[in-house]
Amino acid sequence: MACLLGLFSSAFAEIKVGEKAPNFTLNDQDNIKHSLSDYQGQWVVLYFYPKDDSPGCTTQACDFRDAVEHIINSKAIVFGISMDSIESHKDFSDKFNLPFSLLSDESGDVSKAYESLRNFYVFKLSKRNTFIVDPTGNIAKIYLSVDPDTHAQMVLSDLSKLQKSTNNP
Image (cartoon, rainbow, N blue to C red; front, side, top):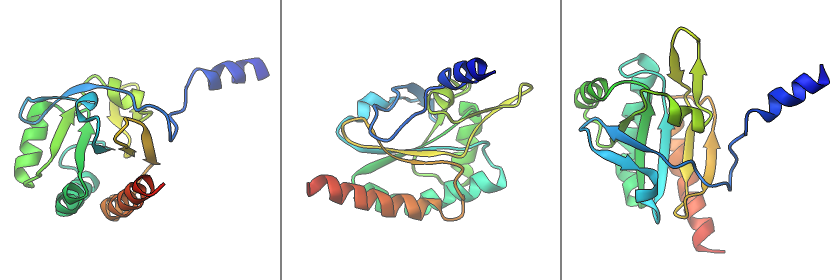
């Protein structure tokens, strides 16, 4: 039994602060390709969410929408990522005037790389996790199972602290 548990736990590599963020290329709601590596030199907020236009996801997206000006002023970029289609993202973005890109991870490969894939066997969803990636491409902060009501402000606060700590060694 111990051998089986050892094999099971080693099969899943845990993503950690300080490690290189997994690179990806995904299309947004306007069918524009975005690769994480294109944003080297910038702070990037990647927030994974389960489903366009659902109550918690709408709250979270609108919260990021309302905080995005401050996030952009802090020289960071925001991407929402879910397994919804480009068309679904377009409708969701237009409906709520979202000023940031929603990336379509229909295969779930990026969600899986970020340990943010919930597999119900019949269907899959992205977990509500967020990652701040620093300008060198490393994971600077991880949030798991976030509260959509307060999350954007928490990210903004932590982003400010992280930026200050890297600017003042």
